[in-house]
Image 1 (cartoon, rainbow over the protein chains, first blue to last red):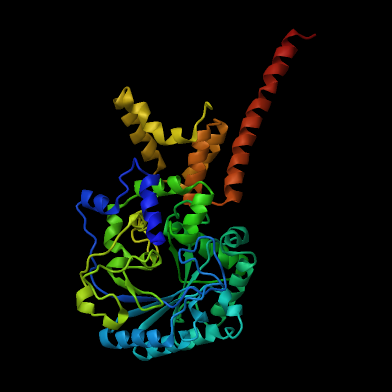
Image 2: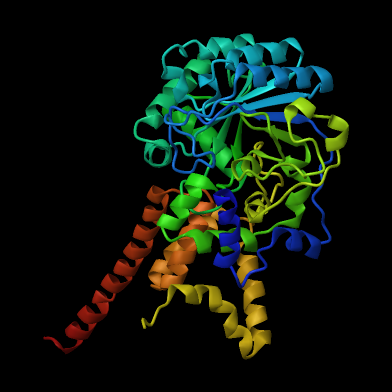
Length: 336
Length: 109
Protein backbone atom coordinates (compact mmCIF):
# COMPACT_ATOMS: atom_id res chain seq x y z
CA UNK A 1 0.00 0.00 0.00
CA UNK A 2 2.64 2.62 0.87
CA UNK A 3 4.34 1.91 -2.46
CA UNK A 4 1.50 3.44 -4.48
CA UNK A 5 1.21 6.60 -2.42
CA UNK A 6 3.99 8.46 -4.25
CA UNK A 7 2.05 8.12 -7.50
CA UNK A 8 -0.99 9.71 -5.93
CA UNK A 9 1.12 12.43 -4.42
CA UNK A 10 2.58 13.37 -7.78
CA UNK A 11 -0.91 14.11 -8.99
CA UNK A 12 -1.53 16.32 -5.99
CA UNK A 13 1.80 18.03 -6.40
CA UNK A 14 1.05 19.12 -9.95
CA UNK A 15 -2.70 19.46 -9.62
CA UNK A 16 -2.94 22.16 -12.27
CA UNK A 17 -1.05 20.10 -14.86
CA UNK A 18 -2.41 17.26 -17.01
CA UNK A 19 -0.41 14.83 -14.90
CA UNK A 20 -2.25 11.63 -15.70
CA UNK A 21 0.04 9.61 -17.94
CA UNK A 22 -2.70 7.55 -19.59
CA UNK A 23 -4.72 10.70 -20.35
CA UNK A 24 -1.66 12.38 -21.76
CA UNK A 25 -1.03 9.40 -24.05
CA UNK A 26 -4.66 9.40 -25.15
CA UNK A 27 -4.53 13.14 -25.85
CA UNK A 28 -1.77 12.39 -28.35
CA UNK A 29 -3.63 9.43 -29.82
CA UNK A 30 -1.19 6.98 -28.25
CA UNK A 31 -1.57 3.70 -26.38
CA UNK A 32 1.31 2.00 -24.59
CA UNK A 33 1.66 -1.64 -25.61
CA UNK A 34 4.65 -3.94 -25.93
CA UNK A 35 5.92 -4.50 -29.46
CA UNK A 36 7.99 -7.63 -28.80
CA UNK A 37 9.99 -9.30 -26.01
CA UNK A 38 13.71 -8.88 -26.64
CA UNK A 39 15.12 -8.49 -23.14
CA UNK A 40 14.55 -10.26 -19.86
CA UNK A 41 15.74 -7.84 -17.20
CA UNK A 42 16.38 -9.59 -13.92
CA UNK A 43 16.81 -7.74 -10.65
CA UNK A 44 18.67 -10.28 -8.53
CA UNK A 45 18.31 -8.32 -5.30
CA UNK A 46 18.57 -5.04 -3.45
CA UNK A 47 21.88 -5.72 -1.71
CA UNK A 48 24.52 -3.21 -2.80
CA UNK A 49 27.90 -2.04 -1.53
CA UNK A 50 26.79 1.55 -2.23
CA UNK A 51 23.77 3.64 -1.22
CA UNK A 52 23.47 6.23 -4.00
CA UNK A 53 21.27 9.23 -3.38
CA UNK A 54 19.30 8.82 -6.61
CA UNK A 55 18.73 5.05 -6.35
CA UNK A 56 15.18 4.07 -7.36
CA UNK A 57 15.75 0.63 -5.81
CA UNK A 58 16.71 2.00 -2.39
CA UNK A 59 19.57 -0.48 -2.56
CA UNK A 60 22.24 -0.51 0.15
CA UNK A 61 24.54 -2.80 2.17
CA UNK A 62 21.69 -3.18 4.68
CA UNK A 63 19.20 -4.75 2.25
CA UNK A 64 18.57 -8.47 2.56
CA UNK A 65 16.20 -9.10 -0.37
CA UNK A 66 18.15 -11.35 -2.71
CA UNK A 67 17.20 -13.87 -5.40
CA UNK A 68 17.62 -17.52 -4.39
CA UNK A 69 19.21 -20.24 -6.52
CA UNK A 70 15.74 -21.77 -7.06
CA UNK A 71 14.44 -18.55 -8.64
CA UNK A 72 17.63 -18.24 -10.69
CA UNK A 73 16.95 -21.73 -12.04
CA UNK A 74 13.46 -20.60 -13.07
CA UNK A 75 15.06 -17.68 -14.93
CA UNK A 76 17.40 -20.05 -16.75
CA UNK A 77 14.49 -22.34 -17.61
CA UNK A 78 12.63 -19.36 -19.09
CA UNK A 79 15.71 -18.39 -21.12
CA UNK A 80 15.93 -21.96 -22.40
CA UNK A 81 12.23 -22.12 -23.31
CA UNK A 82 11.75 -18.70 -24.86
CA UNK A 83 15.24 -17.78 -26.10
CA UNK A 84 15.22 -14.13 -25.06
CA UNK A 85 17.95 -12.49 -27.18
CA UNK A 86 19.22 -10.53 -24.16
CA UNK A 87 19.47 -11.08 -20.41
CA UNK A 88 19.97 -7.79 -18.55
CA UNK A 89 21.08 -8.35 -14.94
CA UNK A 90 20.65 -5.59 -12.40
CA UNK A 91 20.27 -5.04 -8.65
CA UNK A 92 21.56 -3.75 -6.16
CA UNK A 93 25.02 -4.80 -7.08
CA UNK A 94 24.11 -8.07 -8.86
CA UNK A 95 27.60 -9.49 -8.37
CA UNK A 96 26.89 -9.77 -4.61
CA UNK A 97 24.24 -12.42 -5.26
CA UNK A 98 25.92 -15.82 -4.70
CA UNK A 99 24.15 -17.15 -7.82
CA UNK A 100 25.26 -14.28 -10.07
CA UNK A 101 28.12 -16.07 -11.80
CA UNK A 102 26.04 -19.21 -12.19
CA UNK A 103 23.29 -17.20 -13.90
CA UNK A 104 25.75 -15.50 -16.26
CA UNK A 105 27.51 -18.74 -17.17
CA UNK A 106 24.26 -20.64 -17.81
CA UNK A 107 22.81 -17.82 -19.91
CA UNK A 108 25.96 -17.55 -21.99
CA UNK A 109 25.97 -21.32 -22.49
CA UNK A 110 22.51 -20.88 -24.04
CA UNK A 111 23.90 -18.24 -26.39
CA UNK A 112 22.03 -15.41 -24.69
CA UNK A 113 23.63 -11.96 -24.79
CA UNK A 114 24.27 -10.90 -21.19
CA UNK A 115 24.30 -7.30 -20.00
CA UNK A 116 25.38 -6.59 -16.42
CA UNK A 117 24.65 -3.30 -14.65
CA UNK A 118 27.95 -3.13 -12.80
CA UNK A 119 28.58 -0.31 -10.32
CA UNK A 120 32.40 -0.51 -10.69
CA UNK A 121 33.22 -0.26 -6.97
CA UNK A 122 31.90 -3.75 -6.20
CA UNK A 123 35.09 -4.94 -7.89
CA UNK A 124 36.91 -3.97 -4.67
CA UNK A 125 34.68 -6.08 -2.40
CA UNK A 126 36.01 -9.35 -1.04
CA UNK A 127 36.19 -12.08 -3.67
CA UNK A 128 35.23 -9.77 -6.56
CA UNK A 129 38.68 -8.74 -7.76
CA UNK A 130 38.55 -11.06 -10.77
CA UNK A 131 35.33 -9.56 -12.15
CA UNK A 132 37.06 -8.00 -15.20
CA UNK A 133 38.39 -11.45 -16.16
CA UNK A 134 35.02 -13.08 -15.47
CA UNK A 135 33.23 -10.50 -17.61
CA UNK A 136 35.76 -10.90 -20.41
CA UNK A 137 35.69 -14.69 -20.32
CA UNK A 138 31.90 -14.68 -20.62
CA UNK A 139 31.78 -11.78 -23.11
CA UNK A 140 29.45 -9.85 -20.83
CA UNK A 141 28.39 -6.37 -21.93
CA UNK A 142 29.16 -4.08 -18.99
CA UNK A 143 27.03 -1.02 -18.24
CA UNK A 144 28.37 1.20 -15.46
CA UNK A 145 27.09 4.36 -13.81
CA UNK A 146 29.44 7.32 -13.75
CA UNK A 147 27.29 10.41 -13.29
CA UNK A 148 30.02 12.86 -14.23
CA UNK A 149 33.66 12.99 -15.25
CA UNK A 150 34.53 15.04 -12.16
CA UNK A 151 35.00 13.73 -8.62
CA UNK A 152 32.83 16.25 -6.78
CA UNK A 153 29.64 15.52 -8.71
CA UNK A 154 30.15 11.75 -8.74
CA UNK A 155 30.86 11.50 -5.02
CA UNK A 156 27.92 13.82 -4.24
CA UNK A 157 25.57 11.27 -5.80
CA UNK A 158 27.28 7.93 -5.17
CA UNK A 159 29.23 8.44 -1.94
CA UNK A 160 32.62 9.67 -0.77
CA UNK A 161 35.53 7.98 -2.54
CA UNK A 162 33.39 6.36 -5.23
CA UNK A 163 34.86 8.39 -8.08
CA UNK A 164 38.48 7.38 -7.49
CA UNK A 165 37.49 3.71 -7.09
CA UNK A 166 35.37 3.93 -10.24
CA UNK A 167 38.29 5.28 -12.25
CA UNK A 168 40.52 2.48 -10.95
CA UNK A 169 37.84 -0.08 -11.86
CA UNK A 170 37.54 1.42 -15.36
CA UNK A 171 41.32 1.09 -15.75
CA UNK A 172 41.03 -2.60 -14.85
CA UNK A 173 38.20 -3.12 -17.35
CA UNK A 174 40.17 -1.28 -20.04
CA UNK A 175 43.20 -3.43 -19.21
CA UNK A 176 41.39 -6.66 -20.14
CA UNK A 177 40.07 -5.11 -23.33
CA UNK A 178 36.79 -3.46 -22.37
CA UNK A 179 36.06 -0.23 -24.21
CA UNK A 180 38.88 -0.86 -26.66
CA UNK A 181 38.37 -0.66 -30.39
CA UNK A 182 38.06 -4.05 -32.04
CA UNK A 183 38.08 -6.01 -28.76
CA UNK A 184 34.39 -6.86 -29.01
CA UNK A 185 34.16 -6.21 -25.27
CA UNK A 186 31.57 -3.52 -24.70
CA UNK A 187 31.77 -1.04 -21.83
CA UNK A 188 28.97 1.50 -21.75
CA UNK A 189 28.68 4.25 -19.16
CA UNK A 190 25.56 5.81 -17.68
CA UNK A 191 25.11 9.50 -16.94
CA UNK A 192 22.46 10.42 -14.34
CA UNK A 193 21.88 14.08 -13.48
CA UNK A 194 23.37 14.88 -10.08
CA UNK A 195 20.20 16.58 -8.87
CA UNK A 196 16.67 17.55 -9.84
CA UNK A 197 17.17 18.35 -13.49
CA UNK A 198 16.91 16.58 -16.84
CA UNK A 199 19.90 15.04 -18.61
CA UNK A 200 21.63 16.88 -21.45
CA UNK A 201 21.76 15.75 -25.06
CA UNK A 202 23.25 12.25 -25.02
CA UNK A 203 25.51 12.93 -28.01
CA UNK A 204 26.86 16.15 -26.50
CA UNK A 205 27.63 14.76 -23.06
CA UNK A 206 29.07 11.55 -24.54
CA UNK A 207 31.59 13.65 -26.45
CA UNK A 208 32.51 15.48 -23.22
CA UNK A 209 32.95 12.22 -21.31
CA UNK A 210 35.05 10.67 -24.07
CA UNK A 211 37.34 13.71 -24.26
CA UNK A 212 37.64 14.35 -20.52
CA UNK A 213 37.97 10.73 -19.33
CA UNK A 214 40.70 10.09 -21.87
CA UNK A 215 42.59 13.33 -21.19
CA UNK A 216 42.31 13.27 -17.41
CA UNK A 217 42.39 9.53 -16.61
CA UNK A 218 43.23 7.61 -19.81
CA UNK A 219 39.88 5.81 -19.62
CA UNK A 220 38.07 4.55 -22.75
CA UNK A 221 34.49 3.38 -23.19
CA UNK A 222 32.09 2.57 -26.01
CA UNK A 223 28.91 4.57 -25.46
CA UNK A 224 27.39 6.83 -22.83
CA UNK A 225 23.71 6.47 -21.95
CA UNK A 226 21.84 9.38 -20.42
CA UNK A 227 19.14 8.24 -18.00
CA UNK A 228 16.60 10.51 -16.30
CA UNK A 229 16.35 10.23 -12.53
CA UNK A 230 13.03 8.62 -11.69
CA UNK A 231 10.88 10.07 -8.89
CA UNK A 232 10.83 6.81 -6.96
CA UNK A 233 12.21 5.71 -3.58
CA UNK A 234 15.46 7.44 -2.59
CA UNK A 235 15.38 10.04 -5.36
CA UNK A 236 11.79 10.88 -4.46
CA UNK A 237 12.87 11.26 -0.83
CA UNK A 238 15.58 13.66 -1.99
CA UNK A 239 13.07 15.66 -4.06
CA UNK A 240 10.81 16.01 -1.04
CA UNK A 241 13.56 16.85 1.44
CA UNK A 242 15.01 19.48 -0.88
CA UNK A 243 11.64 21.04 -1.78
CA UNK A 244 12.07 20.08 -5.45
CA UNK A 245 9.25 17.56 -5.92
CA UNK A 246 6.64 19.83 -7.49
CA UNK A 247 9.15 21.59 -9.71
CA UNK A 248 10.73 18.33 -10.91
CA UNK A 249 7.40 16.68 -11.62
CA UNK A 250 6.21 19.76 -13.48
CA UNK A 251 9.39 19.64 -15.52
CA UNK A 252 8.82 15.97 -16.44
CA UNK A 253 5.17 16.53 -17.33
CA UNK A 254 5.83 19.66 -19.38
CA UNK A 255 8.69 17.94 -21.23
CA UNK A 256 6.42 15.06 -22.35
CA UNK A 257 7.61 14.00 -25.80
CA UNK A 258 5.12 11.83 -27.72
CA UNK A 259 7.97 10.86 -30.05
CA UNK A 260 9.69 9.08 -27.17
CA UNK A 261 6.85 6.61 -26.57
CA UNK A 262 7.71 4.30 -29.46
CA UNK A 263 11.20 3.62 -28.07
CA UNK A 264 10.27 3.05 -24.42
CA UNK A 265 12.01 0.03 -22.93
CA UNK A 266 8.76 -1.41 -21.56
CA UNK A 267 7.77 -2.10 -25.18
CA UNK A 268 10.55 -4.66 -25.59
CA UNK A 269 11.44 -5.79 -22.06
CA UNK A 270 10.03 -7.93 -19.27
CA UNK A 271 11.32 -7.32 -15.74
CA UNK A 272 11.63 -9.93 -12.98
CA UNK A 273 12.12 -9.20 -9.29
CA UNK A 274 14.10 -11.21 -6.74
CA UNK A 275 11.03 -13.32 -5.93
CA UNK A 276 10.30 -14.16 -9.59
CA UNK A 277 7.38 -11.74 -9.99
CA UNK A 278 6.96 -10.08 -13.41
CA UNK A 279 6.77 -6.35 -14.21
CA UNK A 280 6.85 -4.08 -17.24
CA UNK A 281 10.06 -2.38 -16.06
CA UNK A 282 12.39 -2.05 -13.08
CA UNK A 283 10.65 1.18 -12.00
CA UNK A 284 7.24 -0.49 -11.86
CA UNK A 285 8.98 -3.27 -9.93
CA UNK A 286 10.06 -0.85 -7.22
CA UNK A 287 6.51 0.51 -7.01
CA UNK A 288 5.20 -3.09 -6.85
CA UNK A 289 3.10 -2.38 -9.93
CA UNK A 290 3.01 -5.84 -11.55
CA UNK A 291 2.18 -6.70 -15.16
CA UNK A 292 -1.47 -6.46 -16.23
CA UNK A 293 -3.60 -8.79 -14.08
CA UNK A 294 -4.75 -10.88 -17.05
CA UNK A 295 -1.12 -12.00 -17.64
CA UNK A 296 0.96 -14.66 -15.86
CA UNK A 297 2.47 -12.97 -12.81
CA UNK A 298 5.51 -15.19 -12.20
CA UNK A 299 8.56 -16.19 -14.23
CA UNK A 300 7.57 -19.79 -13.50
CA UNK A 301 4.42 -19.28 -15.61
CA UNK A 302 5.95 -16.98 -18.23
CA UNK A 303 4.60 -17.42 -21.73
CA UNK A 304 6.17 -15.12 -24.34
CA UNK A 305 3.16 -15.27 -26.64
CA UNK A 306 1.04 -13.54 -24.00
CA UNK A 307 3.57 -10.73 -23.54
CA UNK A 308 4.35 -9.67 -27.11
CA UNK A 309 1.66 -7.03 -27.43
CA UNK A 310 0.56 -6.75 -23.80
CA UNK A 311 -0.74 -3.47 -22.43
CA UNK A 312 1.83 -1.80 -20.20
CA UNK A 313 0.95 -0.74 -16.68
CA UNK A 314 1.69 2.94 -16.12
CA UNK A 315 1.81 5.57 -13.42
CA UNK A 316 2.83 9.18 -13.16
CA UNK A 317 6.47 8.12 -12.84
CA UNK A 318 6.28 7.14 -16.53
CA UNK A 319 6.65 10.84 -17.37
CA UNK A 320 10.29 10.29 -16.39
CA UNK A 321 10.82 8.05 -19.42
CA UNK A 322 9.00 10.32 -21.89
CA UNK A 323 10.56 13.65 -20.90
CA UNK A 324 12.71 15.40 -23.47
CA UNK A 325 14.73 12.93 -25.52
CA UNK A 326 13.16 10.08 -23.52
CA UNK A 327 14.97 7.71 -21.19
CA UNK A 328 15.54 3.99 -20.97
CA UNK A 329 18.05 1.50 -19.64
CA UNK A 330 19.74 1.99 -23.01
CA UNK A 331 19.82 5.77 -22.66
CA UNK A 332 17.92 8.41 -24.65
CA UNK A 333 15.27 6.98 -26.98
CA UNK A 334 15.23 9.86 -29.50
CA UNK A 335 17.81 12.24 -30.89
CA UNK A 336 15.93 15.23 -29.48
CA UNK B 1 5.28 39.53 0.03
CA UNK B 2 8.53 39.90 -1.83
CA UNK B 3 8.74 41.81 -5.11
CA UNK B 4 10.21 38.62 -6.61
CA UNK B 5 8.25 35.37 -6.14
CA UNK B 6 9.79 32.07 -7.36
CA UNK B 7 6.45 30.72 -8.55
CA UNK B 8 5.97 33.75 -10.81
CA UNK B 9 8.38 32.15 -13.27
CA UNK B 10 5.67 29.56 -14.02
CA UNK B 11 3.14 32.38 -14.51
CA UNK B 12 5.11 34.08 -17.25
CA UNK B 13 2.45 33.29 -19.86
CA UNK B 14 0.00 35.51 -17.97
CA UNK B 15 1.81 38.43 -19.57
CA UNK B 16 0.05 37.31 -22.75
CA UNK B 17 -3.36 38.07 -21.24
CA UNK B 18 -3.12 41.56 -22.67
CA UNK B 19 -1.86 41.92 -26.24
CA UNK B 20 -1.45 38.12 -26.75
CA UNK B 21 -0.29 38.81 -30.30
CA UNK B 22 2.81 40.57 -29.00
CA UNK B 23 3.49 37.85 -26.42
CA UNK B 24 3.19 35.11 -29.04
CA UNK B 25 5.66 36.93 -31.26
CA UNK B 26 8.03 37.30 -28.34
CA UNK B 27 7.75 33.60 -27.41
CA UNK B 28 8.34 32.43 -30.99
CA UNK B 29 11.45 34.62 -31.18
CA UNK B 30 12.63 33.62 -27.70
CA UNK B 31 12.23 29.90 -28.32
CA UNK B 32 13.87 30.06 -31.75
CA UNK B 33 16.89 31.69 -30.11
CA UNK B 34 17.35 28.66 -27.82
CA UNK B 35 17.63 26.04 -30.56
CA UNK B 36 20.86 24.48 -31.78
CA UNK B 37 22.28 26.57 -34.60
CA UNK B 38 25.74 27.89 -35.32
CA UNK B 39 26.01 27.83 -31.52
CA UNK B 40 25.10 24.76 -29.48
CA UNK B 41 22.35 24.75 -26.87
CA UNK B 42 25.06 24.54 -24.23
CA UNK B 43 26.86 27.63 -25.52
CA UNK B 44 23.58 29.49 -25.67
CA UNK B 45 22.65 28.43 -22.14
CA UNK B 46 26.00 29.77 -20.85
CA UNK B 47 25.47 33.05 -22.73
CA UNK B 48 21.98 33.19 -21.24
CA UNK B 49 23.38 32.65 -17.75
CA UNK B 50 25.96 35.38 -18.23
CA UNK B 51 23.40 37.86 -19.57
CA UNK B 52 21.01 36.94 -16.74
CA UNK B 53 23.66 38.06 -14.27
CA UNK B 54 24.45 41.18 -16.24
CA UNK B 55 20.79 42.23 -16.22
CA UNK B 56 20.44 40.87 -12.65
CA UNK B 57 17.15 39.08 -13.31
CA UNK B 58 16.48 36.44 -10.62
CA UNK B 59 13.96 34.62 -12.83
CA UNK B 60 16.49 34.41 -15.66
CA UNK B 61 19.29 33.32 -13.32
CA UNK B 62 17.11 30.52 -11.97
CA UNK B 63 15.97 29.46 -15.42
CA UNK B 64 19.39 29.58 -17.10
CA UNK B 65 21.11 27.83 -14.20
CA UNK B 66 18.76 24.89 -14.85
CA UNK B 67 19.30 25.18 -18.61
CA UNK B 68 23.07 25.05 -18.14
CA UNK B 69 22.84 21.89 -16.01
CA UNK B 70 20.48 20.31 -18.50
CA UNK B 71 22.91 21.14 -21.28
CA UNK B 72 25.67 19.28 -19.40
CA UNK B 73 27.59 22.26 -18.02
CA UNK B 74 29.26 22.09 -14.64
CA UNK B 75 29.76 24.72 -11.95
CA UNK B 76 33.26 25.58 -13.10
CA UNK B 77 32.00 26.47 -16.57
CA UNK B 78 28.97 28.33 -15.22
CA UNK B 79 31.08 30.29 -12.75
CA UNK B 80 33.48 31.30 -15.52
CA UNK B 81 30.52 32.64 -17.52
CA UNK B 82 29.31 34.60 -14.48
CA UNK B 83 32.79 36.04 -13.92
CA UNK B 84 33.01 37.12 -17.54
CA UNK B 85 29.63 38.89 -17.34
CA UNK B 86 30.66 40.54 -14.08
CA UNK B 87 34.06 41.54 -15.45
CA UNK B 88 32.43 43.16 -18.48
CA UNK B 89 30.02 45.00 -16.18
CA UNK B 90 33.01 46.10 -14.06
CA UNK B 91 34.97 47.16 -17.13
CA UNK B 92 31.98 49.02 -18.49
CA UNK B 93 31.82 51.04 -15.28
CA UNK B 94 35.54 51.56 -15.16
CA UNK B 95 35.91 52.84 -18.71
CA UNK B 96 33.41 55.56 -17.82
CA UNK B 97 36.19 56.87 -15.61
CA UNK B 98 37.46 58.48 -18.79
CA UNK B 99 34.24 60.48 -18.92
CA UNK B 100 35.05 61.74 -15.45
CA UNK B 101 38.63 62.46 -16.48
CA UNK B 102 37.39 64.33 -19.56
CA UNK B 103 34.91 66.30 -17.48
CA UNK B 104 37.51 67.22 -14.89
CA UNK B 105 40.12 68.06 -17.52
CA UNK B 106 37.66 70.34 -19.31
CA UNK B 107 37.33 72.62 -16.31
CA UNK B 108 40.85 72.27 -15.00
CA UNK B 109 43.89 74.44 -15.74
